[in-house]
Image 1 (cartoon, rainbow, N blue to C red):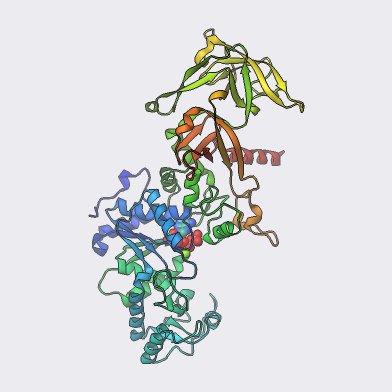
Image 2: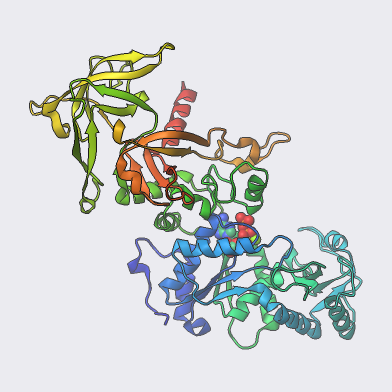
Amino acid sequence: MASNESKEEGKRRPLNFIEQIVEEDLKNNRNNGRVHTRFPPEPNGFLHIGHAKSICLNFGIAEDYGGKTNLRFDDTNPLKEEQKYIDSIKEDVHWLGFDWEDREYYASDYFEQLYEFAVKLIKQGNAYVCELTPEEVKNTRGTPTEPGKESPYRDRPIEENLDLFRRMREGEFEEGSCQLRAKIDMSSPNMQMRDPILYRIRHIAHPRTGDKWCIYPMYDFAHGQSDYIEGITHSLCTLEFENHRPLYDWFLDKIAEGDYRPKQIEFARLNLSFTVMSKRKLLELVNEGYVDGWDDPRMPTISGIRRRGYTPGSIREFSEKVGIAKRDNVIDVALLENSLREDLNKTAQRVMTVLDPVKVVITNYPEDQEEELDAVNNPEDENMGMRKVPFSREIYIERDDFREDPPKKFFRLAPGREVRLRYAYYITCQGVVKDEFGEITEIRCTYDPETKGGQSPDGRKVKGTLHWVSSKHALPVEVRQYDRLFMDESPDKIKEEGKDFKSNLNPDSLHIIENAMAEPFLKDAKPEDKFQFERKGYFCVDRYCKPQEKLIFNRAVTLKDTWAKIAKQQQQGKKK
Ligand code: ATP
Ligand code: MG
């Protein structure tokens, strides 16, 4: 049951404008105080983070006000729609944590009813069959400042319209030879109201209705009507439909019986910096092989960021944080990344993994000795406890944690210098071994047995703390370091002659490390498990990793916003 109390108090923020409208409607007992929303994807691609925003909004409003949400496939265009998209959409909505229960609907299930609505309009004298070509219809629409031209078929008798419309349905006419149009006002200042097309002929089979139909309703004659059939109360859509709203209401006034009316409310779509979001462009990236499918971890699709390591909670939190706007805007993608960082900081198991290993031999540590040291699983959550990390005479550290000739402010390992090995001991570098090309193959160190656990009893301080992995216990893993897919903040706005968004792809958006060395704790990791590799970032076991095969880790996000640093450096560079 819908409750009439305001939800403002339970929120960490003031009500957004949609919540205000809903509360006002509840107060006035509009539509008997019901709240019923829908999420209406067109199954012509995978869902992206913008859709996630819409899903959180629609399901969120219903949850807050004791209502329901339908999943409705807006499948009125048989040309581009496929079953694999329907399957992926259902999977993604569930994964985000929302449930449409048994309310999985398809606009195509309403084709018969929509046809009847169209017949009703014809009988009212509100629709006619027009034999202008689609081209001619377009050319006679006028412009925002000039009225359109009335079609010569506009005043056809009702009986003739009914007969022609029936014969359109029966397949007597060729594509483009005629269409059903609403009879509204060719001089309306709103172009949408200038006798819009309701039905067009398409001699193609539909994935769900097969060959049953050869006329298909346009979006404007399907969406509001489907809302009406389903008993939707608040039909939330993006701003580009704002000027369709008078048409939405016009149709409903003509076909509805009784007082019940769905209400269309528009909000600004989510745009992200460094990201393209249109399904058409994402499809281009997939089809032309710029990425490895719709769920490539660099894609802004829900399945892509899921594979990358995003959690449903971080996406819902992000969606809540960006809020609902009435004006188009661009959200910094760093905000999305930060939502994940905050989430994983609280929940992710810490481990040590060396991505670019170089061997360290601890010369005063006995050859056949090994021991297990205590390590903290998550300093943010003591309930996650401790684990044992094996230590021995030979370990790996990161190659760039050592410099033979350290620059100023380099506080890591260098000849003669002492550093701490995390959870282990202090070590001091005594020398290096190189191969014939001058490359360091081994760093030789001594350790201080008195510093077990990484603390010195005499209070001696060291500046650097390094992560490491015992070489004989190390688990080789593959690590895929992902970065942003585009280099420019607004890849959609590339203006150069003959170039488009694809000219802005980041050539370094994927860097594969085939043999990183992980601590053995990771051997039991399962697909989609998430970890913090200390000092390196958050990583997620690839969803498609098979048991017994080498583990693949996708980098979800770095520990800090490295792009902010780059932007700052660029700014400082400009100032100089
Ligand atoms: P795109 O233009 O990205 O291809 P679309 O609007 O054509 O997307 P639909 O499948 O028609 O995709 O969208 C389903 C629902 O998701 C609609 O209600 C739409 O308004 C909403 N939606 C789509 N993109 C966004 C976005 N970027 N931000 C918020 N809502 C969105
Ligand atoms: Mg669409």
